[in-house]
Amino acid sequence: MKKLLLAAAMLALTSGAAAAQQTVRMGTEGAYPPYNFINDKGEVDGFERELGDELCRRAELTCQWVTTDWDSIIPNLQSGNYDTIIAGMSITDEREEVIDFTQNYIPPAASAYAALSPDVDVRNGVVAAQVGTIQAGHVAESGATLLEFATPDETVAAVRNGEADAVFADKDYLVPVVEESGGEFSWAGEEVQLGDGVGMGLRESDTELKEKFNAAIQSMKDDGTLNEMIKKWFGPDAAVF
Image (cartoon, rainbow, N blue to C red; front, side, top):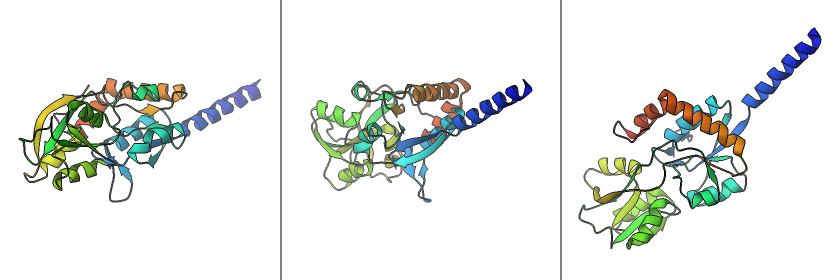
């Protein structure tokens, strides 16, 4: 009997260790600071890197980070190139038709226009936005001429070189663009609330993985560490839970 109990205990420990070492491939863009970016060491960095590592720790998973282009980020999830999307992706009804989302880890936040002049007509001018974003969808419906680019850096460059009158993006992304431009960029138009916050995208079949990450996100909300992390990366005035 003692041998049977010992064997059962060893099996339980082995199974627990195996579960703890399950590797989850975290798909991100690596080009949208402060959400995610590539640091000087060539590694994924930013708010979502710190958040993802902590969520994996709480869920007893091992994170493996994978970068991909934004315009193929959902198809690459669906085809199995990674297991999650953690890339500043807003939760929308349209996206929920093809993938699943965890609860949000960033509350609904403002999108904003940045331009070389605060007097730019963002309703009737040419506005740059990243392809496949809720901001691009909003511009297309606003009456302005939409100019789409593959990366957020290209949207800002389009304003600098005169291709676009303004750029429309998450305000969190544009804050350093405006504040560190030495007066080159300024805010234009009005801020707009879009989406239901930012969450992790998963395949619809990965219900168990979704539950694990939902529990981990909720635990960070409950103990206040998520709000602390948001303020660390987005500033003391950032929207929190």
